[in-house]
Structure formats: structure tokens, C-alpha cells
Image 1 (cartoon, rainbow, N blue to C red):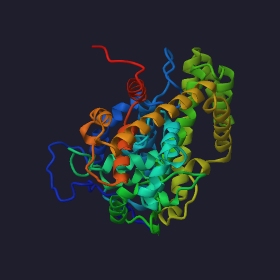
Image 2: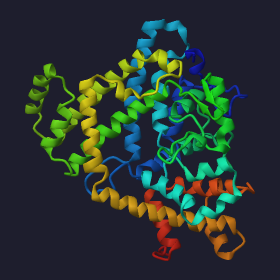
Image 3: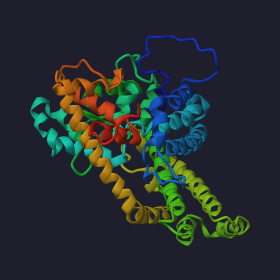
Image 4: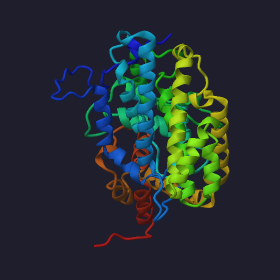
Length: 441
């Protein structure tokens, strides 16, 4: 059984031997949040597609705004759980019990950092370039598990790498985040060995397995198998914050883009409100006459109810979670009426939003852009003495260059570079290396 005293640790990855004296009152967990907010990879999220392609004059969510909103909900979830655990066990049972909200909010900020341009189509483009495309010939140059990493490429594993790997010219430990924050990001705490064609998800690459093992063992995560651990309990709160935000905020975005009309949107959101509270809600909607503000009010009410329900679900299943026996997610353990309303949103989102023409078109374009960039850059790193390869490789920032002589290491360097791109940068580089546009001199 996992123990909260070990699970909540302020030890910083890569800085274990240092004893730094800080000159302010921030805790290490608050420093995690600040390091992420001020980082370049976090800023780049402002130009990475969340769901909808660049919508012109109507502002909808990108991955940056999504991550900030998830962090807000995550903080509320963490604070709610912290209070209930203190009431259950008393303040003294863990020195960092007050910091659960800070840990979860920091992990929420980082949960999408590993996603390549163009969202899930970018992930699929990377994986299939090697599994069924021009990169298939490289299989013979990698071990079985290294190859599985590449053909199952996942933004979750890439986020852990981005946060912990010592890139060229950078300090040891990557972002130097606390062990607890790093573990709270690991939604899939296992290697690509367990990824399947149906679910190509995993939490760390072979190259980063030693680092993940170090963190997991220090925190006392339960080892399930050779390359697999039970989740850190706070992962469930990060996951719940993400589930709440992307589903409800996508409904609001769809309304702004007129994919859903006001009546449809109100019906979806009002389904979360219990009958005894509906008169007050409807009275408020009479006062607030602006349609967008009405939807915003309902969205806020729904998020509040889902947050409270997920806190209750976590506390109810705490023992199962600590024993590694909880095989669900918190959003599925909320009361039936809320669950039914949530599933109605999920069903409509899949049909009307995620499969809408504009969304599919950007996924197709992104797939081709990513595939082309991988093809060009892979050829360049494997044949780096060619004149064209030298020119192309000069475009890669120093931090993504590698001295690793293995094919696996070289391919990972290419994927580090590509996955860090914004949508617009990837499109711009694609056009330039294909001679479709020239820089202005």
C-alpha cells in the first residue's frame, strides 16, 4: 500500500545533492508551477491546436489556455482533497498535505507539454511514419523496445522526457521539478512494452526508464510488473481536471463557432444542474441576457459541480487508489445524473465537434506536414555528411543536437525537435524545405 508520507516529496529531480537556500517564501511545489509558467515549451502551447484549427476572429481554446484552465480546476480538486484528508487523518500525518493543490496544479500545467504540433494527428503521423511508412526500414537498427517507443510515440512519454532529460547545453534534471509533480504527470506509468495497437499510450521511453524508476521507487509507487507501476494517487486528480475542462470547454467553443446553437448548448449544460437548483439557475439566465455570458455562467456552474463530485469520488476510493486497485477514472465515479450529462456531452462532441470538417481537415494537413518533416530530418541525421543534410541540420537548435551514435538516439533527437514545434513553425518549415516559400531578405 502506498503511503502519503512518501508520496508527497519536495525532492527536486537532478538537484538531489544540492542544498540551496532560497530567499523567498515559495515552496518547492510552487517553484514547480513558476518554472513551468515561465518556460519556453509552455509558451509555445499558445500556438498548438487544442481541438479547433485557427478560427480567425473568434477566440477559442489553444493548448496554453486549456492548460491554464486545467491547472485552475486541478488546484481546486487538490485543495478539496487536502482538506478532506486533513479532516480524516489530522494535520500531522504528512508535512506536505497542504501542498496537494500546488502539486496538482503544477502537474496540470505540464500535462500537454509533450504533445507534437497538430494534436493527436501529429502523434499518429510520427508513429505511422515508422510503423507503416518510409521509416519502417529502421526497425532492424533498434532493439524491440526502442522500436516500440517510436512506433507508439505518445505525448505523455514525451512530456516526461521534456521535463527530465538533460538536453545539450542544459542543466541536469531538465526542469528540476519535484518528484511528486513529475509522478503526478505520469498518467500511464509504464513503458511502451504495454502499449497496444488499440491503445498506444505509455508514460516513458526506454531512454528515460531509469529516471522514472528512480522517481517511482523514491515515492514508493507500487511496482506491478517489470516495466510498470501503479499510478501516483494525484494522477487521478490531474486526469479529472483535464477530463472536466476539455469536455465542457469544447462545448462552449463549439457554441462560439456556431457548431452548436444556443438551445442545444443550454440543454447540454442544464442537464448537470439538479432539479432543486434549476429555478435559481433559470432566474439567473433571465438576468444575464447575453447568450455567450449565459453559456459561460452555465459552464462555470457545471465545472464547479463536477469538481466537487470528483473530490468526493477520490476520497471514497482512496484506499483502492493507495493499494493500486482502482482501475477507473474519477469522472466515471461521479453520481449517475452527472455521469449521464457528461456522457451526453462526450457523445455529441465526438459526432459534431471532433469529426467536424474543419477539425478533420487540419488533422489531414498536419499529418502530411509532420510526415514530411520527419522524412527530411531523419534522412539528414542518418546521412549527415551530405551537403543538403548539413544545411538542414544547421536549422536544428543546439539543445536538440545529439552525440548519441545509435539510430534510436538520432531519431529521438529528431522527434525532440519536431514535437517541440508550434503548428505555425512546423507549417513554415515545411513550406521552406519544400521550396514553397522564401524568407524576406
